[in-house]
Length: 175
Image (cartoon, rainbow, N blue to C red; front, side, top):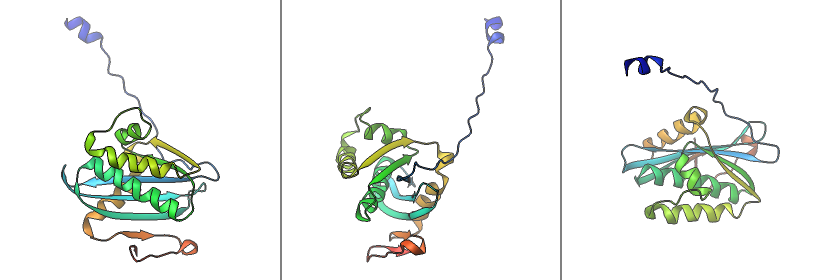
C-alpha cells in the first residue's frame, strides 16, 4: 500500500480569475450577499457596468435578518428591479453563488423557504429582453463583496450613479 501511495501525485491547477466586460448593448450586474451568521443579520451589494466596464449603478442594501441564501436572492432582486425601473432590458447577472445560479437556471430546485423569492426573481427576469445568469469566482466579485459588507454599517439603502446618470428617489441615499 505504501508503494501505491508513493506513486500518487498532487495535481495543482491554477486559473486566472478576472472580471470580464459584457458584450455590447448588454449590462453586467454583479451582486453578492453578506451574512454575519446563518441565520443572522444580512445585507447585499451590487454593481452594474456597461460593455466598456464603466459603472452605471452601485448599491449596498441592509436586508434585515435571514439566511445567506435569502440575502443572495434579495440582492439580485434589488439589482434586477433597479435595472427594470431605469429601462435597462439586457442584463447579464454574475454571482458567486453556485446555488443561486443553479436555482435560476432550473438545474436545481430551491428549498421551500426560498421558492417564493426565487420565483419573484425569475418573474423579474422575464420582463427583460435578454437575461443570463453565470457563476463567477469570489475573486472576480470582490467589489460586490465589499459593498455587501458595508450594508451592515447602515440601516438604509445607499446607491451611487455616475454624474451623467444621477437619479435619486426617496428610498435611495447617494454615498
